[in-house]
Image: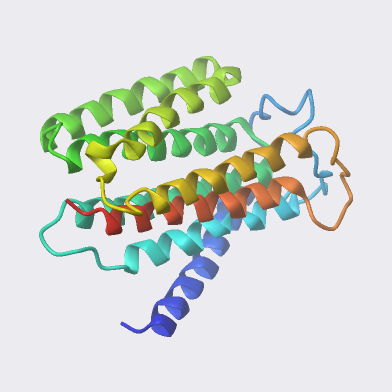
Length: 248
């Protein structure tokens, strides 16, 4: 499949998924409000319609676009990365859809889906690092993934305000593991792509923080949280490039 064929499929899939996400958001728009409503849900002004936050909603589809692109990539034959890559792509699509629904509705359901999908990516990175180097068997990895995912989902429902701390606790182990020589390898440039992914994520997080304070302008044409979505999707894409380049 050529580059342009993959690009056309990714764009078409993103448009279709975006339309589906918009319909889903319209269906649940009157649900229980997200916990952020009382304190302010990010910087962007609320439109009063669907989507509630226009830039934050549509920029979420960057995860869908790049997630489909990852799914269409072919991993090296007979490697565990060939299994992980489409799973990462599917998870990225889930993040994009759930984030769209969250910002489009500012409902608790959307908030839960958004955070839970990010937990799933963090778990995939951490357990995938152990599995692809043989430190953890396939069945134990799947079982642990399911148990942790259920536990995090319940925790997100009961204690939604703990989401940022829990996400950091879920994400950091996988990032640290991917930076270690026994995961990334010892050759020159073996950690180049994971470092690029980490650097992109750090920039995205800095934008997220500034968007909550100094740079907040609810009506500005470019919203920081939208940049956070795009940069976060790029960071996830770069991590999948790292997987392909360090296939075991």
